[in-house]
Image 1 (cartoon, rainbow, N blue to C red):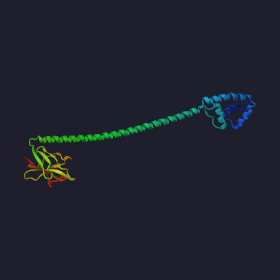
Image 2 (cartoon, helix red, strand yellow):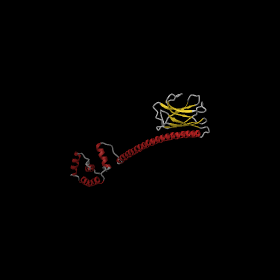
Image 3 (tube, rainbow, N blue to C red):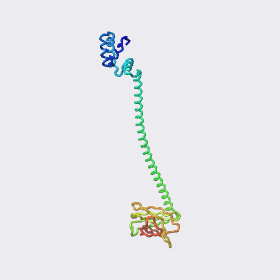
Image 4 (cartoon, rainbow, N blue to C red):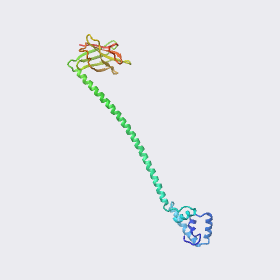
Length: 263
């Protein structure tokens, strides 16, 4: 404040309440006899009060702050310090917000990746199932073409097989072509016991029965099978179906279920 007496620089500190009790008592005693200091205190008080209400976050003036820091032995603080601290706080807050946003986005991406992986697995399963269906359909188509070739062969011969005592309701029809194969369509075959199968036999004059192959009926007792023609038989005289061990046997051992004579 530019006064020459020793207590002349304490007016601002007195107004802002920064004096110790002893200093305050000393300055108030000084005010009683110093018109200049009393006038300055009266001038500073309204200004300090106005600042308190109009700008709550504002600190004391740089000069007052410097004197305060000098009194407590601290380093002189630049008036820009609060702004720098505020900038650091805002930067930290922004970093936290960005990190939180990135963490949320990463979680969304992980969920999306998991969903896409599940969809990919499902698509692969569907593709595998589709490939199996295509392969099955192709095999069925090939068998159907082979059967048609047998049925339309110039040398085709038909053999009707009737059910025997073990399965009186069973029946079958066989189509024989030495050049193209043997087709057998059976119905009403009884369900097979565990470890057993039906076996088809081709019989020629003065020859033992020769196995054409195995039959596995569906749950409704139907079987439609394409066999290769046994090379040792030129023309069959009869055909039969027996029940045998699951792997089949070289010669019939089980009960006959179907028998038919060639015409």
